[in-house]
Image (cartoon, rainbow, N blue to C red; front, side):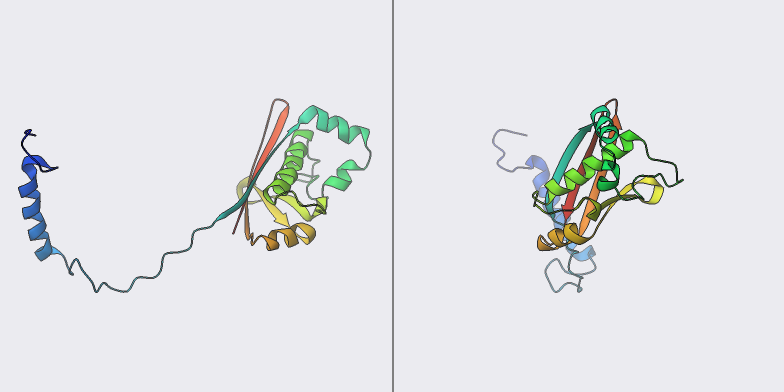
Length: 167
């Protein structure tokens, strides 16, 4: 571009302006209204809260072993077993515990939530899915939450979960 050229496009400015004039004749409808009616854009979900939690797998396993009935208080029967019916391992239970803690954080950590009112189920393709009821469902409704997104992982000695609450 020459230093005395004031156009942002330089020598191509006139060329592009000429093309613009031809485009007016080629378009099926004018560049200014009225346009064909279009449906309004779909409302995208809004994130209401995000929660994350980690659990030390060995420590969690020791807590389960040292406190008879703790697994029953924390998890529903469906959560304690794999889809095959076999008992779920400690790492998997620790990740599900982290999911329940992360969900409470996504809600702003209100008091009075019951452990069994949050259930981590196995969804299509083995993906973990949150199901809520009772106290958790009521707290979610107060915030307008209509959907949950969950990610679980465990490696070495750490299990973690991330929960996104959306409306």
